[in-house]
Amino acid sequence: MFKTEKQLVNTITKSVVSSGLRNFVKPSLPINVFKELNLGYGIADIVFVQYYKEINGRGKFFDYFDLSILKIIENEKKTTLEEIHNSTKTTTHKIRQSIKKLEEEGFIKIIDKKYLPKKKYNIIVKNSIAIEAKLRDWRRGLKQAYRYNWFSSKSFVFLPQDNIDLAINDIALFQKLNVGLASINKEGEITIAYNPKHSEPHSERMSRLLNEKVLNALLKK
Image 1: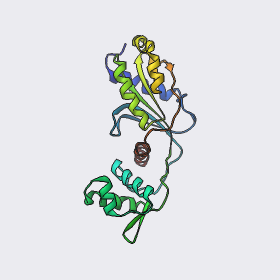
Image 2: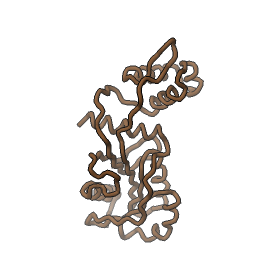
Image 3: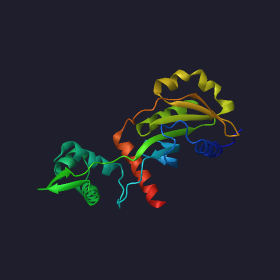
Image 4: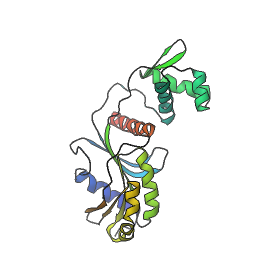
């Protein structure tokens, strides 16, 4: 049916986008599609993202370390460079680089050599579905897709229709991990064996990192 995972991924992408993403809460929202998205916790074959609106005025975008520094400052309310250094065990040079970006974008302010939060970090991502596509090895796909729950609202393992029976026999594993299972045929028809519950991403920082990817993509459009 599918000779390569690339063929499988392309068919899934085309089919899901054309279907209007029925598994999303608000199918009328705009969609961004990322392939081979690496957020530092596994590379998702496909991530479909719906977002509320574009936030203008951003000149720079944050990586995971920048977001970690921001979170420390948000949590501590008032903190010093030394305290951030002790918390992260990272060089002061790298910390200063992140602080400069955060200050320039208006997220923090400096008073008496202490760093304070200045404005709220807004998430424009409403829903995200991460997909791991496998020709046969559904167990490996399940492990990978489970990791995507750290940043996505839902995650799925997709298999060719002819190869899904063994995975369905162990559907309880998918239910336990809240990972979806679906199949697709060569015509692009999707059958969902298990639709996971919509949930908040396990990691706020990784959720914010996905948000940064979306903001950056919107700027390039």
